[in-house]
Image 1: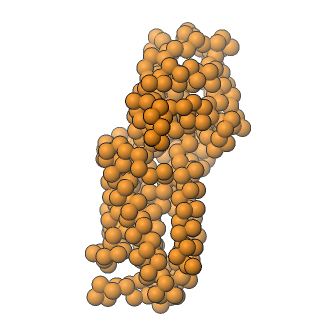
Image 2: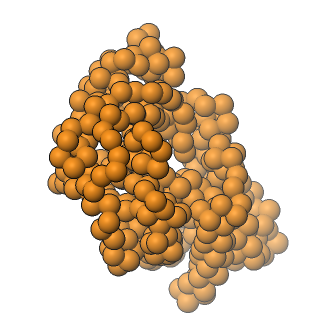
Image 3: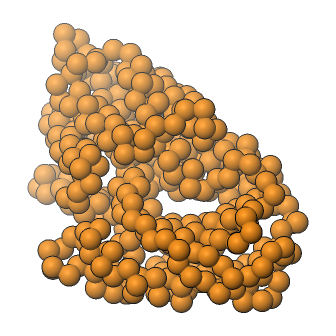
Amino acid sequence: MLTKVLISIFFIFTNILSADLLKENFITFDLNGTVPKAVVDFESDNLEKFMKLDDNGNGIVSWKEIKAHKKEIERFVLSHVDIRFDGRECGKRVDRFEVYRRVHQSYIKLYLALSCKLPHDVIDLKYDLFFDVDKDQKAFVKIRDDNMSKPVILSDRKVEVALKMQQQTSLMRAFKNFLVEGIWHIWIGYDHILFLLMLLVPSVYYYRDGKPLPRQSFKDVLIEVLKVVTGFSVAHSITLGLSVGDVVRLNSQFVEVAIALSVLFTAVNNIYPMITRHAWIMAFTFGLIHGFGFANVLHDLIIKNSRDFLAMLFGFNLGVEIGQLAIVAAVLPLLYLLQKRHAFYRRFILYGFSAVTALIAALWAVERAFNLSILLF
């Protein structure tokens, strides 16, 4: 009976996560040249609600199939984007169509040439791509113009915006927007969540001769968790800042594979203990890699030449920490209570949950290394 309950909880958990994948679109305006341009960037799976892309019916939409529907996709996207400069409608044509992989999803990027002339004072943008069928969708608008930028977030509640080029976005608004995004991204970053859980699960034990023995007090557990979470937080904060600041950049595919392998190693370590002391060092080491993963997301949201850059970076990082601490606060007391049933905890949580996580992480690593789609989440 307990096994069935655990399996049910696991599938509910993964279904929730799969429903909350990266549901962002990006619209970037480049106004520094003689011809204004815009880039529309979105996750390709969203299109399947509107058109049939899986031509061979194998359940997997390949890049070849996406490109075969290029004209249809272009028409659909352009019909949901309306751009006006100073009240004058801008003609739009697609200069380039690109398919690429980011994190764990295939993305489509359309490079648009706009017919409106520069200079201008106001951009009126109406954008409602996918909002009518998915209330969780958000669009991040980024504008570059003479080294000044204003990030704006659109959703089903706000599909139109007038962007005044001389209007400064307040530091507090930028901070709040990215604080929320940081919280959201740790909650939908299920590889980061599973890594964190794999660190939390053995925290209720200490090891003697390679065998897990229960800690006697919640205070001892809490001290161990604080060490681990602090190590992870400090590490990913370092590499997040270095990467977004373009001091250090790593290939995004390499980073995503490395994150999957970090989850795999941590899960296997719970089953076959290799590192039983100073777990915070392991958390710190792998946290450096996870920081580059957060940076891959933040690179799409932030503009480094904005005067609000530091507010955005700090807000996002603080949001990640808040989201992470919320997970710890929710999970840790439950783990401590379950640990009182020592045999159950070792069999189903320490070993069973870790084994399932190891399998998922191994499949993630294969998916990300070879651009495959094996799992549904």
